[in-house]
Length: 298
Image (cartoon, rainbow, N blue to C red; front, side):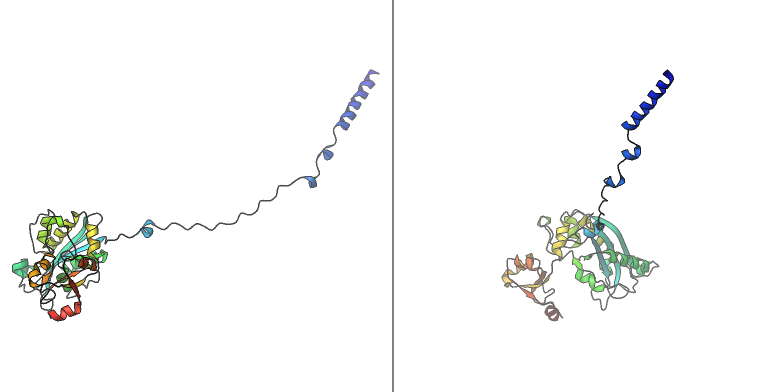
């Protein structure tokens, strides 16, 4: 019968299909036969790299002082044991930028001023009400910021500090008159005055013998000095006192080289020099012990 025959054909097709395709359970590979990827090896922990130090800490310090305190004093005389400092002027100067950062000037009260014909300071003016204690505090703050103290004739100015209200200064000093070797093309004496130094560098001179004006003259010279760093480096070389060994007829050689007669060494031509400078002289010199020089001048 067609109906049975058709039905039988369908089952036969099903059987054929069942034999042609294995059960799903048989087709799936056993779990044990599946190849698993190996677990990744643990990555060792790396130590953190050190943070770079700030540029300020790693940068090499320049071979010259960066901040200068240029100062000057006016006094009632030459002897710190009997006389008094009555004016202080100071300028804080940035070498790299050739710039004045701050400045201060103040009078210290006094009853008498025998040096008035020189500095023009009326003692009555020093007793006028003024905030000199606050100005002194400003000076001390500028001093704390400075790397080096500069004065024209530093040997005179430094002896007044540590007396009366003025603080003692323990920072290094440099003398712009004695220690700096100004360029030969300026045609300056070996120990130039502030006025001569200012004029040599084209700085107008309109007043003299007041503390702050002299400081400003030096600052303006430094502003116009392209070789200032080199001058400071050479000026900070260790120095000692040397005595010229010359006959009377040859004394002009010592004078031309900046030696002074009778100062600081009595009865001799002498000057403070570095070993390098002493070796460049055209005449013989001998080093003198400073204590011996002081005993001879006492």
